[in-house]
Length: 354
Image (cartoon, rainbow, N blue to C red; front, side, top):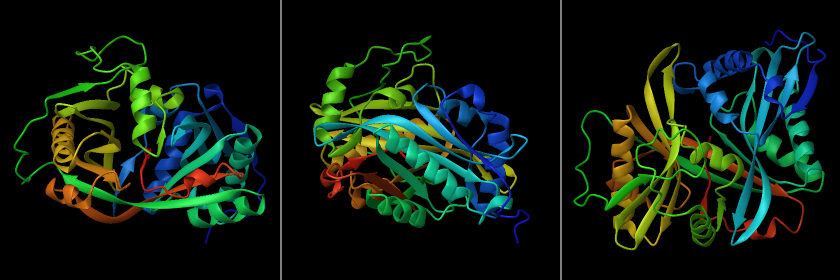
């Protein structure tokens, strides 16, 4: 039984001002929510560093459910992105962090947050993308994504991707026979350069053209995406440029999170957030994955995970030591006609899963 009457008055506030966000309150809320969902299971810790990282730029907005005294009991964050679709570009809001206090679940908080989020997206003329995965914090994603949006004239597309994981400690599969020709970090956001090698192997404009021509659906390296994955100040996330063979290249985005089991932190996990292959065959993709696993291991990660988005063959994942887990991520795409038409075939897409 929940301890809150569903008629309890709450204020739903939409803001793009970091000054309106109490990071400590969000940490306490999300930790309580995810701790409840993952009781006895391994989970990612969304701490203050995570929210400061997520909200580090200016291209986002958040919907907050607040009590009378201003305490948040639920929230959603949407990141402003540009989506490349077969060479076309669409302004997009990417909905990610979403949590509801367990005491307020089944009282309509999730739906009210989603409605406020969706109305903001509609008013600003954005295309909508959202990601949800197993144990989503108090939200029945399939119901929320589909039902209210369709009634209001939106069209929805869904794609599910399994989560694959590989342990980086203990006994590992044999290394690839050939080391990558080169592996460097891409940095397109100015800052105090903490990364030793700043000689970018490709300029930003060329990279954006490569992304647009490579994946049918992928986020462009601009706005919030650049802040998170091309910022030289960040060490918990970035993009590595790999050249496993002459004329064959990969760009692999990553982020690093703390793992916990109940109340105990148990190590770090490296997430491969997106994998863009420019002319690589399966063998070179395998070399690139092995190199990224080694990079994340050296960064202190005990495991690495990625979402199956059809960029990499399952046989390649198997050879690299990845195992398919029971968990999956659902990507939701919604817009008014006719923008949804190009999204019917999502077999070639590259999206992060924050």
